[in-house]
Amino acid sequence: MTSSNLVRQQARILQDQFKELYGQNARVYCAPGRVNLIGEHTDYNDGFVMPVAMDMYTWVAAAPREDTQVNVYSRNLSAHAEMDLRDTNLHVRGHWSAYVLGVAASLRLAGQKVCGANLLVEGKVPIGAGLSSSASVEVAAGFALLAASGLSVNPVELATICQRAENEFAGARCGIMDQMIACCGHANYALMLDCRSLEFQLLPLFPDAQFVVCNSMVKHDHAASGYNARRADCETATRILSGEIPGVRALRDLTLMDLERFSQSLTEVVYRRTRHVVSENARVIAARSALERGDPELFGRLMRESHRSLRDDYEVSCPEVDMLVELACEQDGVYGSRITGGGFGGCTISLVPRSQVEEFGRSLAQRYEQATGKKSDIYIFQASDGAREALQ
Ligand code: GLA
Image 1 (cartoon, rainbow, N blue to C red):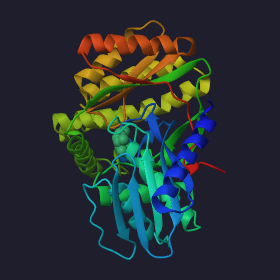
Image 2: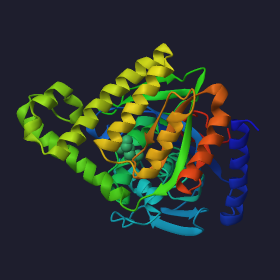
Image 3: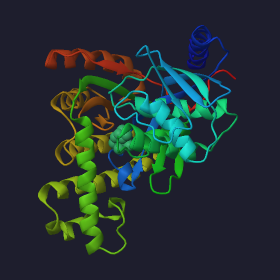
Image 4: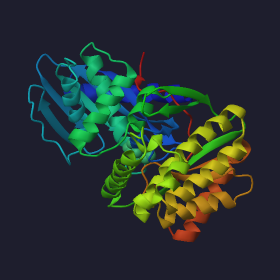
């Protein structure tokens, strides 16, 4: 079945379930998960990222209500939550509903007069795999709430509203990458995003090589605290270096030469964190020309360098993910591989000649299991569009 037929089929199933649950007809919206090709932990440093929207979605069926009540039922958790939109003191931190109700609250805070709604949510993006299941829930819910109220905002604004929901209501200090790609993704293209201006460029993917995602199935408990600690290190570096070098507002404004000149002002750890961010930004810019020139060899080399930098300087990898990267790079013809997403477990992304993709996936999963005793999931995905109504 083609990808768009699958989307329609899934949407109809959700519509039927909605009718059973709420006794109303619903419209269905979806927003994709993502994989980042390169540019990790650069978004909250005003830097560059290069994500792709995957054809794995969170689905939200929605119908408006006459009052100011928002009801949400999660098919994944078989759980219900609700809020009154007039409630200005929403407490949902640490609760699954933050990703939906927090978006409703954030829309209101942004001045969007959304009305009450009944919602049914089903997420098909693997949770905790670094494929941005949370942003896909937020963006699908935001899109659905706006549409049910007869409103719309531009995709970049929706992304910032959803990021605010995650920062303030879910309590995760994420950057803007995941919400931007869930809103602005484009079938068959990667998005090169400048996280300062939020301007982006669509880049066609390689005709003869394909990106393949492998889930290590490892998820570390300290992922959230580790992420926030890395952000804090970057803030420390920015504070110190902006006092030394005029014009530095974020690590995005530094060159490696600046960093070397002032390395004595930083602790060894903060120096390494900064070196990762500065070198990673340069790699994203080089990766753009690799895509533009159709040079998978160069792209693959940059992926391998990115992984080393994330492993050694930023320290967000783990032994299982390192093993996946190593096993991928050992295979004939593979251009490169790296950890993707926030880290501390999760997925790798590898660049593989198109003709070898199936064999690559089979053999990687087998070797990973031999080496670690763990199963993995391989995702051979299509680059998809961002949030949209599923049945039009
Ligand atoms: C998580 C965050 C993103 C980004 C990545 C790391 O996915 O949500 O904003 O910081 O980690 O690149």
